[in-house]
Amino acid sequence: MKRLLITAALLALLPAAHAQQAPLRQDAAALKRSVEQFLQVQSGGLPGQVTVAVGAIDPRMNLAACPDPQAFFMPGARAWGKTTVGVRCATPTAWTVYIQATVTVVGEYIASAAPLAQGQAIEASQLVTLKGDLTALPAGIATDMGQVIGRSTNISLPPGTPLRLDTLRSKPVVQSGQLVRLVSSGNGFSVSAEARAMSTAGDGQVVQVKTSGGQQITGIAKAGGLVEVAF
Image 1 (cartoon, helix red, strand yellow):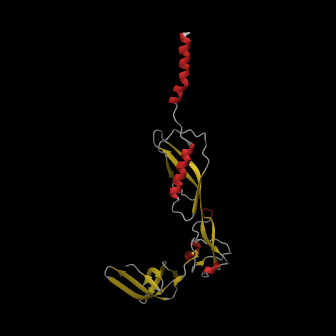
Image 2 (cartoon, rainbow, N blue to C red; image 1 turned 180 degrees about the vertical axis):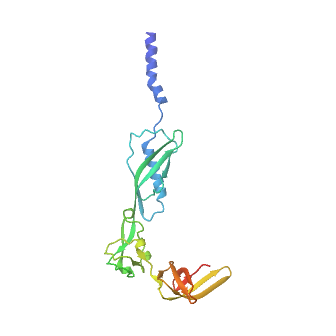
Image 3 (cartoon, rainbow, N blue to C red; image 1 turned 90 degrees about the horizontal axis):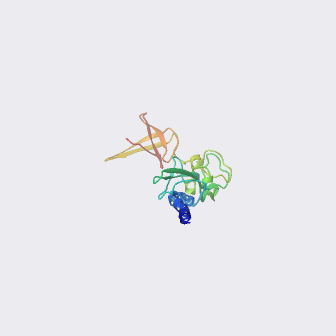
């Protein structure tokens, strides 16, 4: 009888001993929080109302518990639209997982309110400010009318078209054949000379000019018919 009681007591202790020896597993909710916090920091400077949604994490994922999981981006990834965030653990057990997420940025952008003709200077009355998910639009969308007014489009656009900065041309400040003033300055000197532009350029664009002596020089077009040259 005494032997039976001892055996029963040992069997009762086995589940508790097994529970103490079983390694702790990583909490899926903690992984999700790590990704959310990481994306909120990474998207802090974006223009608009940012919303972060982390994809479902497989509850069957069997990872050792990590006291300090670190979220990171793979090369080329960013906090914009559909993205992937890695989470790694260094100790006590090294592991790395990749989790899908979506960053939505609702903000204002500029679109055409009327048909825009190719090459025509854009006026404020031809523009409208709309609101939407910027991550669902093409890259480089104008978000301020000041970025668009006075510039022209490379192609004709119908009303309602979001305006991309890379399809807009600056208003020319130097016209081909125009007489311009070459200017250059440095430490203790300033030089100015007259030349003729060999191409049309907007403010800040590279332009080639020819001096009265026939020398061809490349400079930067500036407002007022000026071309800055570095010597």
